Image 1 (cartoon, helix red, strand yellow):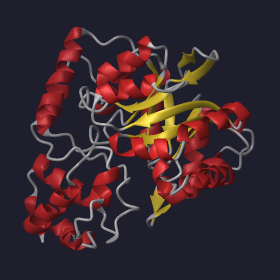
Image 2 (cartoon, rainbow, N blue to C red; image 1 turned 120 degrees about the vertical axis):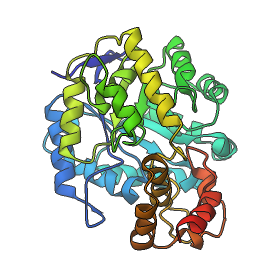
Image 3 (cartoon, rainbow, N blue to C red; image 1 turned 90 degrees about the vertical axis):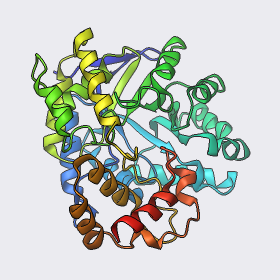
Image 4 (cartoon, rainbow, N blue to C red; image 1 turned 135 degrees about the horizontal axis):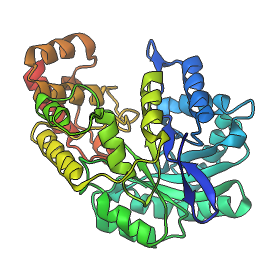
Length: 374
């Protein structure tokens, strides 16, 4: 039975597992609409009541698919979350058009949980110039959105705290997993939000699936030697669920198998991890950190602005897999066969680096990738 946590401001019960619609199943490069709808409805039937999408996910297809999935009575059972992307607006007058597009795609009149998307150092002046806070406040006052929040990808906990104090937020969303305890808002930011009574939605609890894929031998040996048998996903999700400040944990699930595993893990409220288990997770984190070359989560934020149409997450992932699994020849083959345009097509325009939530030096990575694999 799905467990819930209370949104204290309203008393609403929110499922501990949230459905993140950023990594929907695909077929031939396009979203597999039928399978995505089946997964979303299966999640809701199993007790998930928080569904999260965004304007840019799957180039807008995510919003449309979520809207279709919430037909036939599912909308009334769901807290629907969507996000306003500041970088898609050139002037303040563009904001209403973006919002109306979202309502049209979702086929709804009200968005329950509305976030200013991806606030970081690079967007602060932009947000001020466009009066985005004033715009979203007006949406809340008019009842077109119920609760206002923001998703954070800034570099420091200090900026996160400043943002929390700068506006009357109902909730916020941060990246958090056992690899990123001191990254972006981090655990310190989570605790600060808790002290202010602002519930926190967690994204990337498994670091974009990086913690559950081909687990390095050094890490798998730690899990195999644990006194209790758990999957890598279970270790990661239980670590996040251990924090009482967490309202819900978003997981971007691509397959029904992933969904069912996450439902199993969070169906029962996880008990507190023991000090020994926390120590084991810390060891796993240290082992990963020694191997991972670039902290990319494959979120895809970098893709729309690339004038060369380079699939940067794919290229970075090939680099990381080579570093993790010592597979240079395989990586070189994948770069030659599966990557087009090649990393050498990069013109170092900086568009991707301006929007990257992980603040990676993407242009330099493209240059190094070209030299190593082409």
